[in-house]
Length: 336
Image (cartoon, rainbow, N blue to C red; front, side, top):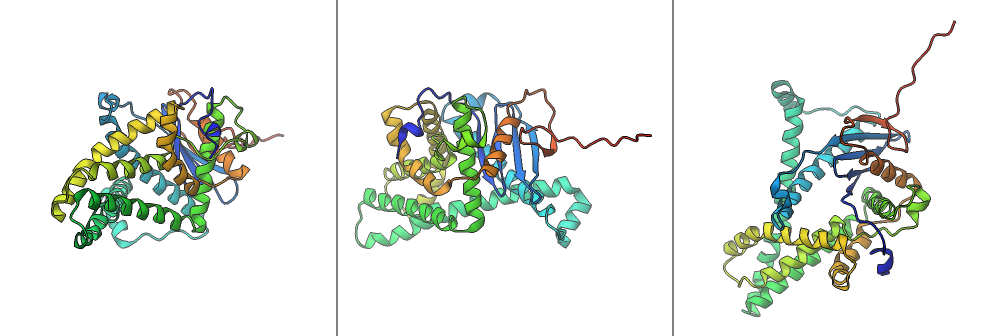
């Protein structure tokens, strides 16, 4: 792993970050987000939203990490649902609404249905994550009490099992065709941000020069969460299953806060300590990022350019060019 191509000397770190979705990318800048999707006909579809200004809690170390984590989870789920909706509308067959969805829409409106689906999806994601990566490992490792009563050893085994389960899960889904494309867009996002932070003109050729790995990646954040939880949980002793589950759930906000602060520091520093701390996350990024083609880089470039406009610029939804600017319909003229 060549750190000089990841922690690039003289680069100017920014707060721009993103998320890969099906056939596109969501970028988040200082003032707005931009979702750019490549449709079947090759055109680019974009939706921008102006971000609400954060309160003072988003400025307090450790506390801000909790709010950023929840905010990112909600926004990420919303983006995935929006991209799925646009791509579904792009298909030849119209989607058929179920009776329950039709009833909800009729009674409460389509916006209520959208919010209901969004928050339900977030709840399902949280329940799945808690069940698979918190409850299941600690329940399985309880069987190891037949071999040792050392609480530190039991907690370490639990943490290692949780980490291995997470890595295997990522590795398995990476074999799926659609997920491979998402990981290519993930690589495009990182290459484009690298190019921007190194003051290069945003062209596919310039972006291809850079690595797909980036120190501020959300994948690294998740790896920090796994490693820090392994260390903290090992200090909690080994009470009964219910207390273990409760104690782990109560520590999740603290772990998220610590992980966020490390990620912020990693994005601004190229010290030896930061490089060492970043190794697990960067290794995982070798799975979650793939080399994109130039078409995918065009999507990333359009998304970055779209979040660089002044806050005063209005929100937009519709077709855009490679420069991230709206494509206005041609005006028909009648010539005598």
